[in-house]
Length: 202
Figure 1 (cartoon, one colour):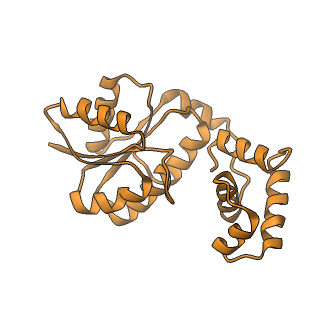
Figure 2 (figure 1 turned 90 degrees about the vertical axis):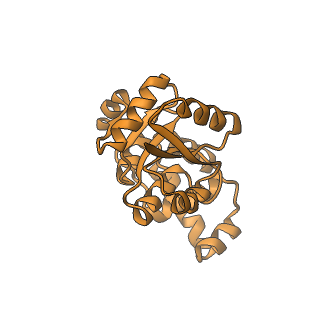
C-alpha cells in the first residue's frame, strides 16, 4: 500500500483528488493539507511514502519550498509536484529542490496514478513538454536574496516591512529592487514580479 499526503489549497480540488486516488486499491491518502506550511508537520505525523504537492499554495512555504524542507526532514518520502501552469522555470526549481516528479494538473487521472506509482517505486516523472522547454530557458538571474525580496513584493509587502523581515535597511531593499528590475528588463516592480513568476523564479 502506498501512503499519500496531498497538499492543495483549493478545498474542492483537494477533496476530488483524495476521492479519486482512494479508489485505487494500492493507494491510501493518509493526510490532506491546504498550505505549504502544513506539509512537513503532517508528513512527520503520518509518514507518507509519497507527497503530492501543488506548487502554488498560501503560507510561508510554497509547494517547492515545502518539498525541499520535506527532503531534509523525511528523506524517505518521495515528492510529486502538481501545477496548473506549464512554466519551465518551475521545473528547474523543482529539480533544484530534489523532487521526484513534476506533472501538470491537466494530466489525465490514470497518468497521475501511474506517476505516483513510478515515484513510489523509486523512479522519476517529468512532464515531457516542460522537460524540452526547460533546456531553452535562461538561468535564473536573481540571487537568493533578490528572489526573497521579490517574493515579498509579490505578496504586497512594502519596502519598510521587507526591510524588517529580512533584517536589511530600507535603502538596501530599494537597491535590491532597482537591481532586480534591471536584471529582468522589467518596466517596474510589478512587471518584475510578472516576469519572474512567468519564468518560475519566484
